[in-house]
Image (cartoon, rainbow, N blue to C red; front, side, top):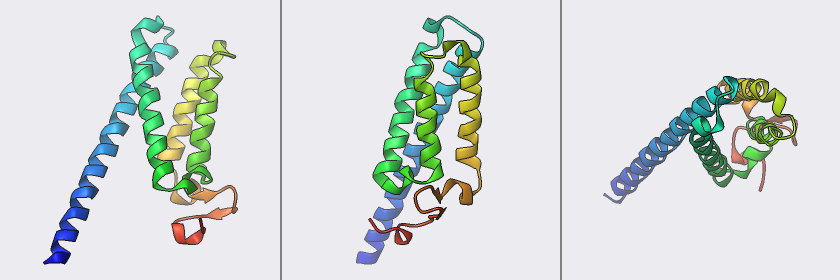
Length: 139
């Protein structure tokens, strides 16, 4: 009986976490689409600023979620490339004449990070090998 209770709690937690993260990703995509479209089509910032805020806030939450879940995300390509996207976002002010190109490049980089093969996403830049589980790297 105790095993059933533990199993239902873990199943419930799984679904809560899964739906929460999926909802957060959906918000992130809405924010990226809205702000990206505004930047690419050179619309007035007031039109897309709220989307930008949604994209940034949801992106920070998604990154934080990954780091808290497992710090090794930071040394895997999926984390390193995500940090590169943040750096590129920071360069919007310095090279504003290329904002459309930056948005397109960041979106392409995002697709590679999200939908690339596991061997690419889980590759550790520190260990120079694919890291699939916590057991492979102590810490």
